[in-house]
Length: 250
Image 1 (spheres, rainbow, N blue to C red):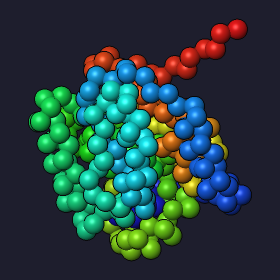
Image 2: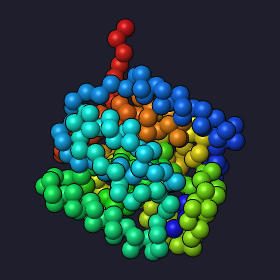
Image 3: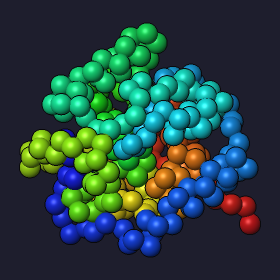
């Protein structure tokens, strides 16, 4: 499967934003250390975290640690560095699906799936394959609606994986479809890696798009993103409502 997916009018972010990504990510991480305060609001249900393209487990370790401190049973996806699907996409997804089903069977509770960038594609597709096991999906900077020519990640994908032969119009259409479970797409208009418009999910009774001010590389540490994630995960199962930002007192 290739990272490019949907042909459309969208363009990749300006090179100026891309160039600023590493520095902005450092600031986002620093802000997380200073401004992210864990609150014990979790109910202990399992949350599987999928890293972005080229991401090793350590890239989501801060996020997983924060979620554990908030009372959630956060897990790494368990596949090491995310170099993209290995071999046939659906056959490869079957292995990840088995993991989701195993977490569900062990706990007797539905599992939340949290995916960053390309990892969000996995989360969305897994929720479509086993919706009875999935409580909700949250994606961070995942351009499921348009990646062809609208991201700066395609070259990296080719270097890591090289297999760009599997994408078809049918698969493109499938990836655009919203999972049949509550779904939140977190995006940033100043994302330097992917076009933010490609991250917009159609609004419905069980789906939403939430804007933040994070960099793409800083999505997994930015304090505002952390607040959104925890707010979404803390909702009692079966009572999902769209995100509402807290109003600051006058």
